[in-house]
Image (cartoon, rainbow, N blue to C red; front, side, top):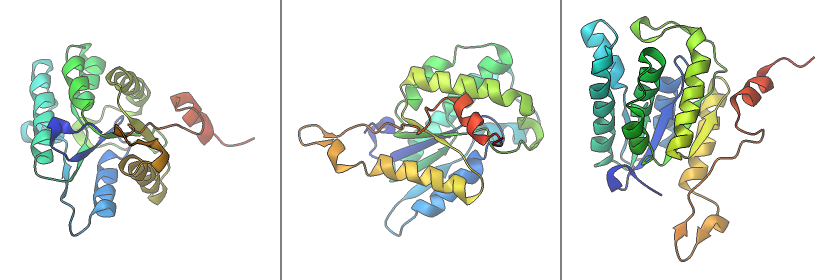
Length: 219
């Protein structure tokens, strides 16, 4: 598998629209994956730090710095840890630059950086939206953001799994994907080239509309 900056760390990236439980999931994964011999760390969201420090959301010309700093922190942490859980990546900064400012210039670098992560967990829209100060625009932006994230992941050829469910079920869904990615089945290993790059396959199809359809009450 590819690793951020070729450090050997296994990097799990969490992405998704606002208020879909990324930070809660990051902490749950760290708890579930921690062992006495495993050096594991969560890289928090630099955007939140930026907004808290300035009391406002970023301007358009501040977005490149925020994206670059998020990537730098992930790479720096990966240099001396075994597992890194990134509570967002520069890809989300690129998506919001597109959504808010109509600026698509950040995608190329963000997609290149994101492609070096080993596994991406995309948080589904099946949890209720909650306000969170400066950083959230409202439930109406979640579907267009989700669509942009999926498109960007496709362009980056990123290995990703959609995480759905509530409470412990959401964490268990994420952990199932992590285990498959970190310990692929024996039949996927080629003696000449090593483990095959893991790919996620949804039992439905992976389409956002399909996922939401599954959440509707049955007649």
